[in-house]
Structures are given as structure tokens and as C-alpha cells.
Length: 266
Image 1 (cartoon, one colour):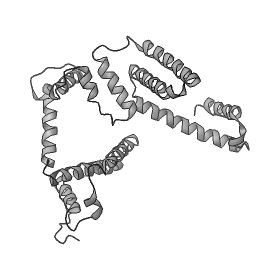
Image 2: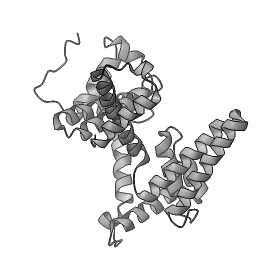
Image 3: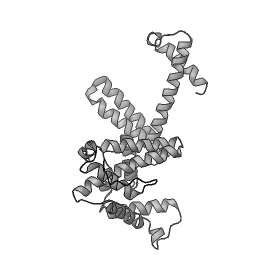
Image 4: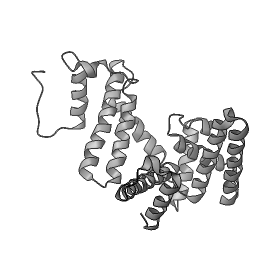
């Protein structure tokens, strides 16, 4: 045990940084000391999704806890950086403060805006300038490949649309879905090796429809998966109630049960 550690009723951000430094330092925790930016990078993603879960559940206690877990990830990565004299927590705070001031000239400067749309337009322009992006291609290249695929596709499409590379309306996007569907069928029938590429094109075209409809592709697919899972559960329960074995019932019988469940509005 670290003998001189101060126990408190309430801790601060500075205390968090100190605790993480202790954990990684001599006499600390062997596991924490062994970690690198690369070894815990997936933890950051997991903790972020748990924050989203808390938000979806509208659970403040859970949200407070999960935000703390995200903050721990920030602290761990920052302490690792401090250990090699790369940057400090103050540097991290300094950079985000400067960014917020720079990108809100309508609050911290003399720029006038009349709507949120103007705010976003200015934000994008300032962002491109600060990152030395002069073309739409550079802005597209800057969208991290590490994003979830649907999210990345939607962001790339938005950046292309800002320079006019877009359908006039949703009908063009819907026609493209039909075209890509036909190409998937053709690939599966004649050249299965081409199917992955064609299926990718189909998914990309569906994301375009989501964008025109003003919905988030990632959240929309999550909701559709939730709906499927709930209906499947009720279909399985209905099959069991009627003495049916799902594995041997056959698709027609199961589809009939599915439609029954669907008609109940569930």
C-alpha cells in the first residue's frame, strides 16, 4: 500500500490524475503499469458505448459512473503521455479550450449568426482552415477509418454533398438502392467473388437514403435490430405455446407466426 496516500471524502480531477500516476508508478498496480495506448484503445470504445447506454436509459446515476470511466481512459492515456514527456493534462485542457473559442466566433468574437445552420457552416469552415484542408477530398480523408462503418459512410457522404456531389432529392438515392440491389443479385448469380463489393455498394446507397431522410444510419439499424430481436422473442414464445419446434417447423409456418406477432403491433 502507498503509505502516504491521502484518503478523502471527495476527490477532484487533480486527484484522479494523481491516482492514475500512483497506479502506474513504483509500488503501484502491475496491470496498470503494463498498459500502453494500444493495449487499452478498445476500452475507450467500450466505455463510450456504455455512456450511450446510460443516456438511452435516462439514468443519471449510471451516466455519472460511465462518464467517470471515460474520464479514467482520458487520464490513463494522458499519464502515459506525461511519462514520455509528450503532453500533460493541462495541455489537453488548453487545446480543447482554444478549439472551442476558435470555433465559436459568434460567442467569443464579433461574428453574427442567425441560426444553428450558420453556426455549423462556420464550424466546418473554421475546422477545414485549422486543419489546413483546402479540398473536399482532404476533408473526406480526414474522416477516421476507425469510425463504425455506417457512421463513417454518412459523414463521408455529407462532406461530398457540401460541394454539390449529391442527388437532387431522395428519389435519386432510392433509385440507386434499386440499381445496387440488382447488381448484388447479378454478382450472386454469376460471380460470387464480386458479391462483397456489390453488397458494400448497396449498404452505402442505403446510408444515403438515411441521410436524405434526416435519420442517423447507425441508430436506425440499432432500432431495427432491437425490433427484430423483440419480434423474434415473441414468435419463439408463440411457437412454444402452440407446441411447435422452430427448428423443424419450416420457414412458411414460422413466417405465419411472425406475421401474427407483427399484426399485434409488437
